[in-house]
Length: 319
Image (cartoon, rainbow, N blue to C red; front, side, top):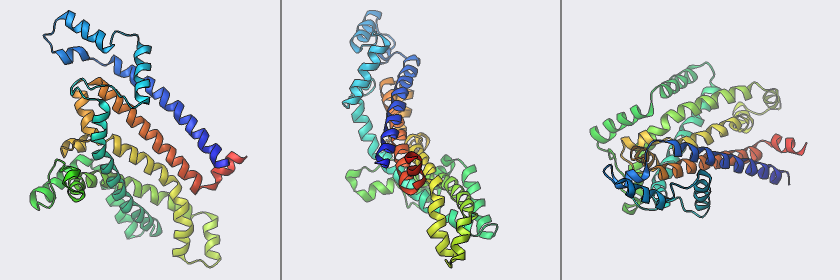
């Protein structure tokens, strides 16, 4: 019952946040320069033709009317029709999502597999050469932007060694292996900076846990250093790491514009870039709202993970 109440409150809060975000997104998009009717008909279109198209598209309707029409459409899966491609926005998003989502999952998996062991090793060997070495590499990973990593990976693995494709997406129709191969270099370029951040967070959190009294008590009861570290230390240190994992996954879904353009991947990031360049505002506002909803949903999952990992949250709601 306590867990159900906790989730219910978080869902209510998330719903309000998404509603407010939809208003802000719609309002900002509406004041951006660019006339959709002018974009469709061209610069030489007649004034009466432009006025007729604006009326047909509902652009002359009041702000609140257009907003509610947009929101009600989204509730049934209708994001509108792209001004540039003349196809439903939902089809564009769904087509690109099958590239960006696997890319984000691959990048997050790689960064987690690298960062968690690195952070644990650094904390358990505090102020020794493994700690110094790992922190030096993570500082380098944070300082160097991921697009530079991307170009370096293309130069080494695609051009020099010719192990990987330099860009483009083979398509899932060509096989899972071909699709994963196309996403490998972009995933590595995204994962390395994120792994550097996550490793430093893991190290700091674990160092704080190792200094707690209950860790000394566990050692005094006869547990070995390894058992104390993994049974009590890592589990408790992982609680703040969950927040960073959630934020990183949100960033990897929404923040891949540069990487997808470098590798010429037809994902959501590239679609956002194209929508901005072509003033396709209906695509842009639908994409931004979808990404905001993804961030809110991921944070909700992180809160759920908190409730399962940290019993203090349940006690707080019980009190």
